[in-house]
Image (cartoon, rainbow, N blue to C red; front, side, top):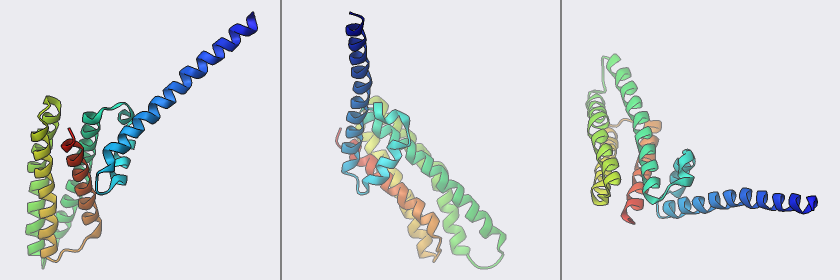
Length: 181
């Protein structure tokens, strides 16, 4: 009799433990499906895997998490832009076109994009997915224009361009996720 109770207890324990793991894998499947259509799914998955809440998120939650990653990447871009600008301002000669381009980048990164990301978050919360998608599309334009202006000024700083590319890939992933709502 005691043996039978122990076996039942072990079976119930196994079912509870395994069902939690199965649920986690099922939610990871949703993450994979949502990132599948992005141009670079690995960037999208890295973003989602960096947030503990992603395994419990629905598609709207997943889009919100990718927007958080965009915001985090924006902070990195903004800091890099400030540091580069500061270094260039210390130089007295050359680089005027680069300085002007960087000042424009810094302004766009710190002001316009923050507002657009905020609008995208609000759109997701209120269910206005068209507004959220348009805001993300708008957000993508600024770093790409910044990159273009800097390349036109013959500024060559690969790490900064790499961050812009990651930002563009995250924006693309977010737009593609939102487009399916």
